[in-house]
Image (cartoon, rainbow, N blue to C red; front, side, top):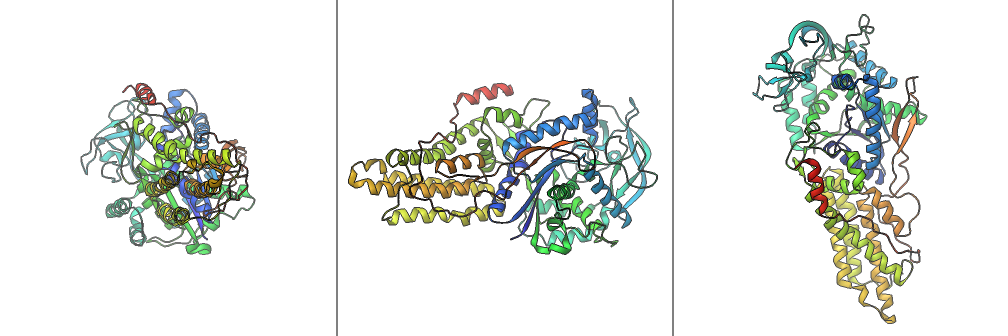
Length: 598
């Protein structure tokens, strides 16, 4: 079995996250991680809140608080929301820890020592009205390459090319609309062109990636330019070089420090585990080779950072670019095995927008609906390979027709009949070919559903699992055990119900990565004890290096179900079940559309 790193995109801590965010990074990574743990792999799932950069500073100024106070507020909100969804992080931390600062500065120093970070004078944007620096992301204009009118000063979201703000046609401030002034300033740049050959060779060797991710990434190599790695900012990580580290106006920029979070979170997890070097099992290229696999989960707007920039940083620190060099003190580091990018989720035909109130935040959703209902929608109808529209009508339909009437009804009526007529799981006596056929069909799902999850085809995987649910429902309807009322027919009734309950147990295991909350309930309804689907916990921790404390998500995932059929034991007591899922009144649609102002 392998060491599997699940590196999950870092949600930005300038506000609560909405369901579009978690459809891209949250639920898909958790489904994959839970499945890989159930199959025996040693999984390390890490992430945290991304807390540096200008948007935090701008929002903090607007709210009349410090950037740290703003980050503290939304770090806690996001931790609680992800906990509510049951996302099984080994460590969900943050980028304002002293551990993270140290790891970021180590990678900066290693890249600088190997010649991949160079100083140069460039033009910086200044707000004429305030005299403050305008960061690239807060400058908008027309892209000089494709003509897109809303390109940002660091990147065009339409064509994906890197930009500098002075390249924009008709640049303007996104804060107040004024035209910025450009003045000379000195910064450090990552020499991306020095990695073009190594990145190309690496991408050419990628197999099984989603075609859109691979094509987009390869196209980016055609015109790599040096990328500024520092900014004129007050909020961020100091530059670890003599003459720079004490400057209050220069900081490492957020795009550089955030991607390093995958490594720093792994190191923090190891330090908290009692074995400071344990992280190397997932990261050390020399020690692990093919035994360590790394999967990175994000929305499509972050592909460039994970398929080009982060691999470049890893190559440069390991001494593997055009300029060679020596690995830093952390050693040579593994590159991603796969970049798993989702498309966008829209809402009622419109792009999510907090300012326009076209949004539903995770917290608000979970106050009104079950976490597994959202997880199911994302898995079954989410933006896996195409942009997808979330509508309340479709959410209610899938909840009522598929979760409640399909899976929930199968569980409820089977356990109810067994509890009423036998009080326990009945023995399976003289099973017929039809009985065996159902069990064989369902058990085949461990291979088919598992293969699809392993290939990041979760929509097809849950579709296959629900097809097997339909097969079990058909079996129960065809066999009609409720008609076998006389005493002579009761053994056959028991066999039918025992067969159905075994199929339900196996189906519950197949659905566990997708629906962990309800999977635990079904496990207990079948008379099971102990943890079936382990859940994360929120733990208040001290900063390992003396900084302020903070909440983390973590958990013990060594317990729980394995990806295999486990025979039920005849005679296990059963009680009358409670419904596993809640049926939603169709009026929910009108109520939610009214909240949106639709």
